[in-house]
Length: 109
Length: 115
Image (tube, rainbow over all chains, first blue to last red; front, side, top):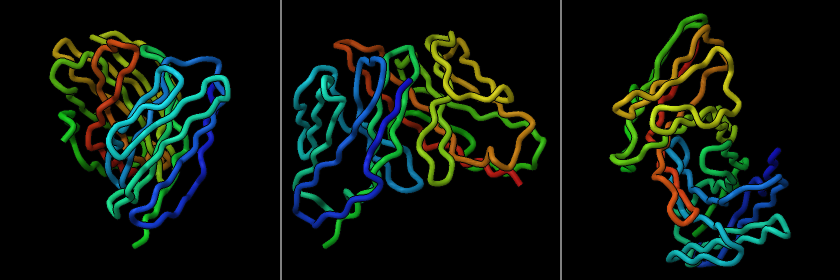
């Protein structure tokens, strides 16, 4: 099976950098994905990793280490609008897709 | 706007009833996923269809069923509704993976309230 752990809540200051961690225990997956979800809204895709290493996408970067069962999402130059939940997910195309519980990030002025 | 549409936006119904939620994927996407998100709960994967065929099944109750039609829209049927079925139901679609990655695009969701 697949079990995904994320910190429940984090707080950071506007303009700062924050790292949201995701650890997982899984028998195998193709991709690891990060989504942003504002309260009451739909998740929006941020980034994915298929290979180990860092994927950079503007202010967002995601890292994956399969050997360590670990991923993180790095958010730079934090803005107030980045206050949201961040969901880590693993899955294989055509198979089950599992989301973590999400990390609620609060960005303070 | 993700390009995925869901109707209705809100639905209020009584216990024991049956409802149908509808989803249209983004143009060109063949895969449709259904998720349930209860208050303060994470996203629970229910079921996936690809080009009309069921591909993966998650934590979907026997009272729930889904299908994907030839025009690729999908419907999620929820029957014998219970109070605990009150949740946000999301549909998502994805393109066929190319380099091994495939992002999912989520619709705005249907908020179901069972009274």
